[in-house]
Length: 175
Image 1 (cartoon, rainbow, N blue to C red):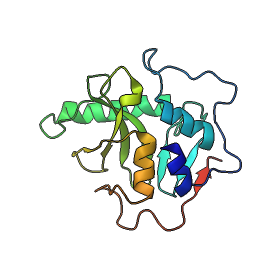
Image 2 (image 1 turned 90 degrees about the vertical axis):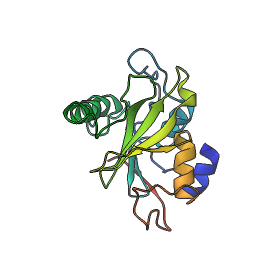
Image 3 (image 1 turned 120 degrees about the vertical axis):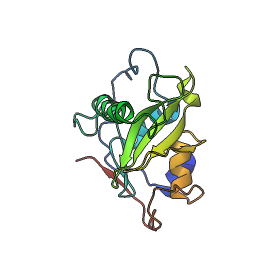
Image 4 (image 1 turned 120 degrees about the horizontal axis):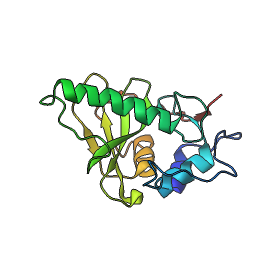
């Protein structure tokens, strides 16, 4: 899927935070990152996709982009919402089976998650929780399949703006 994604989203000339020369960490000393995500970060690094989607990166030194910093902050925030109103917020969070593990966000405040459905991270699919809503939109794709699908307009996310993506799609590296 990464090759298909490359056709829609050109690889930046100067990617940053690609993890060059570094060992990929485990998630909570338990899970490897999915291979498609590793390939994406290795090619693109940290940055914004089509001026709208930002993926968290374990190699970013920016707390707002660092996967591990954002994982803790987002899970804590959503957990407090679930505790306050479990009838309204009915989804499960990581580390529960089929729990949602945050991987990114949009400029509109939507949160992108992996659905941790297996010990094999390559089987994880995508979910989106829109800002100001409790409904979860599940997408039966891995991360790069989801990105390629959204950018090619093969996948239409209910929470994304009608005009997304625009005709000109770029990857803007983190500065």
